[in-house]
Length: 287
Length: 345
Image 1 (cartoon, rainbow over the protein chains, first blue to last red):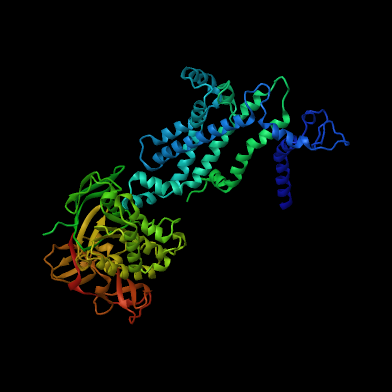
Image 2 (tube, rainbow over the protein chains, first blue to last red):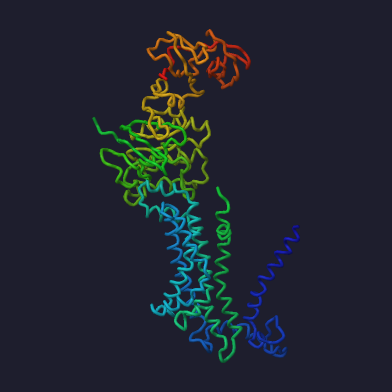
């Protein structure tokens, strides 16, 4: 039983990490090797492999060229990464702040029809976001939000809001009301009690919610692609836009860029993994 | 006469059609230790929360120090509330917990003032050595001490205590009871203490308010409530083992229970039928005329509780440990007629 468990974990681990490993290797290859008919697993010093000239120039080349402006794009990878960071971080902060405030209201006050309201908030998740891409596109055109940072921030904030409200409500429900009530009687206003007592207790929940929000904003592709011709192009849209350019796909640079792009999310997720697990199982055990 | 610290009149509160407080009305004067006694669900906690401003009553008035308190938010009412199931912020140290109420921005206390008050409260409650420990590492009794400390540092005009000892074990509860009673005397501010434990009420209170199903059934000194309960419900709240309640019929001075077994002789200008309340300590196991069969004998250490069938009624007797009886024995209980409480039926 124990060995079987290990086998399954190792098997799954291999399947999950193999693509990532391939991207790592590709980021260190010559472009010719990344698209050669016979797969080259290990980066070779020159392309095609020539034992006479051993240089490792390709190893660093792709990483150096991240700053290069490729045909079909207006700026280098770093510019688009900056877009991704601005949009991802600001939309996460916005949906976390709004979601926490909204969840606090539902958690602590008697709101007429609160069950229905919560269901309505959840229902905004029922439709695949891309189903509304055309109306959103038309609205954005009218409102001049197309191709702006604010446009994508607004969109991602709204998409993540339902998740954020529901997750935060679960976490806030777990904080005893007496925590704030004691503060209220002790001389604090509701707002002060919220800031000084509730928020510090809700840190775990906020970290979990932030991870989920930033992952979905970070990886979003459909809207970033359709609402943008320039201006606020994020990394996923940038990579896709390189297709069919005159010089061909710069695979080693894309691989290197992809690694830079996923690294913060992987590190953030590993750092908060304990909280994440709690976040995914919260509410399954009633005290 | 000076205004009472707290004057409550005709307080009403319902939750979803269920009346939790129904015309509650009483005063609390300076320096007084008042215990609200009632069973679980009587509305005791709601009463405290309403006074603290955490609940809004449907009707009624709360006057504190001569001013209307209902329109004030909890922070402005100058009461301290010790909760039953919350005592401290687990992540903070004891010191930070004690300082927390003092650091409310509106209070505007200086750093040295805060330090001074915390030190005084800590020494009063003997918790100096705990000050730098995280609250979650404290034992139940220590937590409750600190929780009371949180109230004391405030120097409020009224202390509200919601069963602060209920979650502690029996021995600790009795120790703290005595200690806190002494402490309260020194504080000067009145205490409104809520409990469902009659012995707590009898031992601590200057005055007991019996609250059952949202209504006040009696207000009085402990002896008064114990020996002259206003109603059978009140009598049932106090005393362990519980009071014997027997419906009886009088013929002349002789009272008999429904099946005719004579209980006692009392001169009482009551109607011919009544409900008699007899405390278990007012029944002697010997010297009576009618026989009773012992059913259970419970050894309580210095005393014994004897449960005996007396005609059609079951009597609880409190006897000294010298009295030995076994289930099945026949005894002749004698009721002390002078101590019987009579409610006309």
